[in-house]
Image (cartoon, rainbow, N blue to C red; front, top):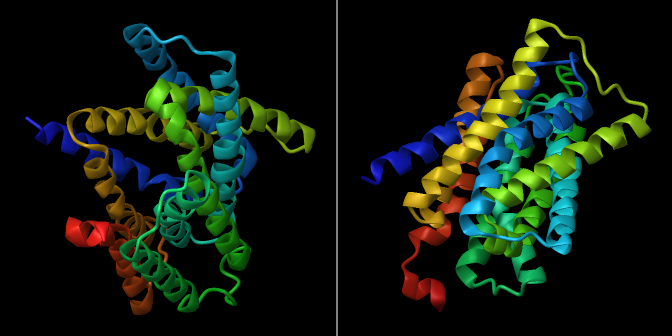
Length: 299
């Protein structure tokens, strides 16, 4: 019976893994600011009916402070983390952006220890070190830094790291709200608040919010909004209902592999041997704690 919940999570991760590749396909057709704003507005509207139903089923009453806090979370997620990710994709390689952003669980561990005082044990510290080595291996072995193939690969790496860090911070800060309001409600309202704020910021910076309505642009925006930010999130949340959150999160270990393979196939990007080793190290770092027996983790 639990097979369908595992399939929900697997399908969700496969969809999430296409984000960087599809975002790269749009090229200069839409600015990263506009694309991110529209993506989360559409995604938030897709989640809205489910969020309203969840509020009614659970008989929850959202306070002004909780709504305001979700708004702040939305600004952090949409206006910072996801915008930085889209800028990283725009300036560099989709595969490298996907790989570096996949490190966000390691930043979750760091921020959780600082903000909510979760203790970091030796096993977690080793996992952080393995992840850092994997990331440095990928960056060090990249051959395209001086090739001119990409607009600014160095800036892209910086943006990807910043995206991973801010998303890790977002994940830690959402824990309390998710516990009281639920995943779908928290993400829905944070998406909507964040997208509207980013639209205002885009207009303030005099960057184009609208885009040319070509078939390619419309298809990509709708795919990012409806499929990735809407359907994939719903599939993942539905999967978590039947299996534990920790088991569901295991599927995220597949993202750097799937995204890298898709980037090689669809975008003709290249990966050298050392970068494949780096990917394996990152996957190991993300799953490292689960490989160690519980009695050793506690000690």
